[in-house]
Amino acid sequence: MTELIVSKLCKSYGKTMAIQDVDFTVNDGEFVTLLGPSGCGKSTTLAAIAGLQMPTSGRIKAGSVTYFDDGKGIALPAEARDLGLVFQAYALWPHMTVRKNLEFPLRLRRIAKAEQTRRIERVLSLVEMGHLADRYPHELSGGQQQRVALARTLVYEPAILLLDEPLSNLDAKLRERARTWLDDIRHRIKLTTVYVTHDHGEALSLSDRIIVMNGGKIVQIGTPREIYEAPSDPFVADFIGSSNFLHGELVATAPGGSLATVRLEDGRTLAVTLPREIAAGRFVAVAVRPERMELVDHPTSSETGTVLEVEIRHRSYFGSHWHYSFDLGREAIRVSAAKEYAGDRVSVFIPTAACLVFETSPPAAEKRKIAKEAKAA
Ligand SMILES: Nc1ncnc2c1ncn2[C@@H]1O[C@H](COP(=O)(O)OP(=O)(O)OP(=O)(O)O)[C@@H](O)[C@H]1O
Ligand SMILES: [Mg+2]
Image (cartoon, rainbow, N blue to C red; front, top):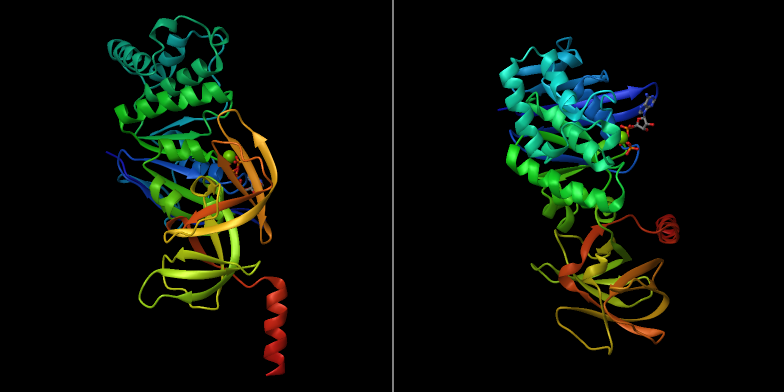
């Protein structure tokens, strides 16, 4: 039963702050994913937990064992931490069969022979590799090698599992299959796990909770649904899935209610719902998921959303659907639809409930105008 607590963790390389004040808890048996763009500090965080990188400051605790505490001068060596690590490179022993690869970590730990056999059979069946146990790594596919790498970690029953982009060497089809078996395994073993990926689909489908990182800091922690449906800022809205952004100014808020109107950059209005109170006159970015925007044949009025006529700039055929793009204000908007719209002009329906509103700073031209007015006053 192990809970992992990471507090105020910082790591700098010279002047580069790789991670800053990283704070999170992984509950016992929970599968948590560190998600973010390249260079945001995911691997640095994982390596610090594993004991492969010495943090600059902070604390890491697993159950009752302190792995790292700069205040108390504690830094437990990697081999003394009860962890299983799987990286992108499988690094199996090439001269050993699958079974021997699994036996090796158990021999190191001086596990009795009968117990070794029991555990090896168990993990082989868990990763469905029993029938290939006598093959050498070069006789296996990439996906099969990755299963063995995971099995080799699980066989010594670590308290915590750390996985850094374990599927990223696999091609797209194999990766999807691997994601399914990994999901299946995680439900069966319920091990405290930290998983690192920059693939939002993988994070959404596998995790109990997701920690979104950007520029060395945590920007949001939540369940996959919370992260996708209520992103905390425009970065999260765009990084997890994708979002179209409409820019404008909040012109009116219904008293006491969450309904409001945004005047878009081209002067047209958009009905939105507000997550929290934002004062009229503030500049906002409205994020709308492409799948929530709907193309319609005829402009109609609606109480539950806004219909805007737009000019299609680009269309591409994807077999099962079409992609369309058009300009709204400064941004190119992308929408997909099941059918072909042949004409240049089409109407797009934007549901009020699909609008995620974020307060932003005024655009540069607007800032100059505000400064000029302030100076004159
Ligand atoms: N040994 C090092 N020396 C100097 N800077 C480093 C070192 N290792 C990592 N960094 C820097 O620290 C930051 C975080 O790197 P990290 O490897 O944690 O990113 P990541 O989120 O895992 O990225 P990716 O998705 O590309 O693997 C980056 O700016 C990186 O350049
Ligand atoms: Mg990395």
